Image (cartoon, rainbow, N blue to C red; front, top):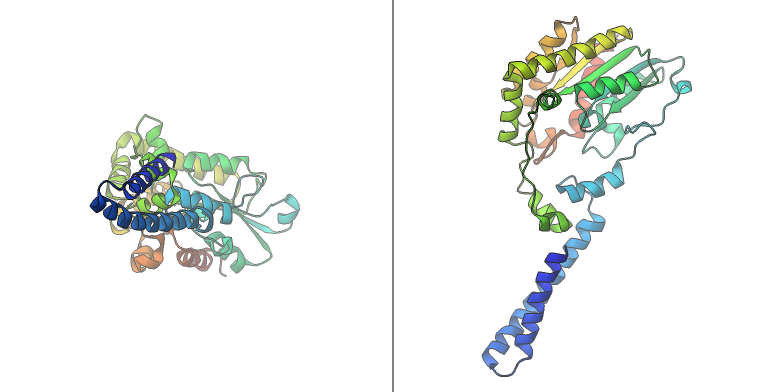
Length: 319
């Protein structure tokens, strides 16, 4: 931010100097005209910076995300974006633990009541306790640990929300990882510049997904990840819980992610898991503008969360 201010200040000083001098009248008139435009532009930039720094709360750009999280992202003592739960809260009720990543946590969804976990909880009613263990940035291995560490160790149902980047931990375990380009320093400093820069970002673009799909096609990586899936299924079984798996495809291109969604589903099926919801047909049938939270952020929208929550209820809980 200081570098941007230094540049603007230098331009302003130069224009003031050109306007103040009397040796070259023509240059003075030009400087005077430019000075008016300069102050107008600086004023507009200042208003824009103020708005995006203190008013706007958007998931566009990491600066906007900071404001968005401060406004909408409150967590409980376990670090989950959910209410505080105690054993007394679930005593005498049927229980559901929903484990997942930022999709389960509801990234981009302002009201937690709109998440698929909460929609399912509302449909099930007061005789059920539906607990959200969604943690942004987590993957299968860490999600298993989240399940193991949670105080409720005898849930009736465990729902695993799976997204196709959950294979990254397996790739990282053998030294393979994606490198993402860093934005320029001036973009990181200014909230306004960061927002404008984010508008030219494609989010999870083709290069990102080429790497993800290649990880599934790598025999060594897939064997590691498949064992992670087996470990999760085995632990849920050891708890005596019914395991339901919800698999989200690449929401920006559901069709090309079908083979990988199927591969994950088949891994769970080989472990005896039959309650699997594959969402590529659902995602493909939706208008892309209403499917995700932003053209540059491929997390599911509140409307699609509602769809998923209602479908979970209709398929696996409705009697």
